[in-house]
Length: 394
Image (cartoon, rainbow, N blue to C red; front, side, top):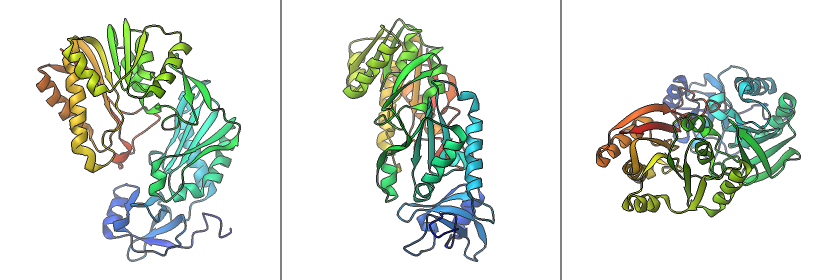
């Protein structure tokens, strides 16, 4: 073992009694306020103890982030390469049923897979890796080696061009870590094909967390359909198989170009992609007396932090209120929120208030969450961020 080895652990972080209780409840994060002041040169992985120096485990240490510690292991012995290998192997095995040619799925979902701040997504034969903390970054070379051994991918791409790394004091990076990785690949989702921009697309290239919801929602779609915040047209293309016509609306002309390429890829002719502000568009269609049998609302996160929550509630309520007013009787509304700060209970209450103001009766057909390759760790509500309701508007 050498000093450069991240598993050669010589330092400890001391947590308060509140931090100890948080860990004992099963949470993996300890915030800066619950960690005693430490040396400026703390390593990326440290031993965690209470004030009496009783061992609690080992964690990633982040000197600048408010999330100061991310627990990696509760064992008395330091973590090893073998531990990381086994965690990765188990995470992959849990998704084995989703792995097939042209498939795309999340292989590692950070804390939910007991690999804090580490994300691995698979697109066909290529992997995309995110290391979102100092500890994860210290393991990046090792992660690439293990992933090569476990999966033998054609290439591994780093998509660390995310703002979360800036909060860690890490730079943003994007590029191949191993092998040759094309800029774009074609994936298949329940028979629908999509171009995925691995280098520049949002998240790691595609909104994988909505995959199961897209497949479930299309079974309810029919008639005239309006897909709001369509992005690259994923929901719209699923709906097009069952609907008379689909309008996909987004404010970004760039993502709509990709959406049109996806429509061409599937030889889909009944989708009209339109560039517009969704809030304005819904108001205009209500004023014009338009009606739709299927409407989908899949907006970006309106609340990125707790301070933005009041304004976000207003935004979510408005788009759902407008959509409910545009629905034909017995119409289907698919509505989502990916704002972790807005709980499922709050979102449900907001939808109930929107229905009252729209003077529409609503049936809840399905209450859904993120796709099964994005599991929720019960002790960490932060891993449950996506809420999706399929509603019938009477």
